[in-house]
Length: 55
Image (cartoon, rainbow, N blue to C red; front, top):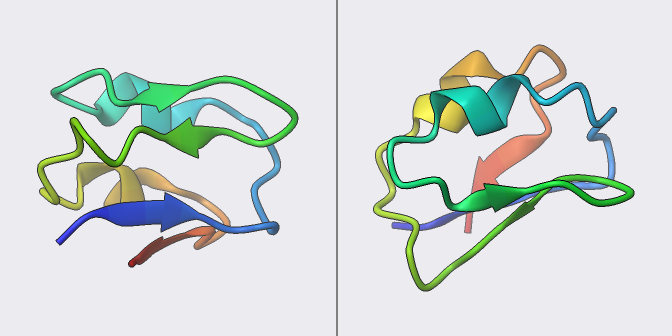
């Protein structure tokens, strides 16, 4: 199951460094590419604000 980043993202970048498929890109908040996300949850586990949830 793919993940998404919610509005509570503070754009710290922690999640991007944990993604094994480089599916997370920077913006006003970070965004997960749903086509390449493998649903491993590494980003969600690393997020200090809990902004990443299963879609």
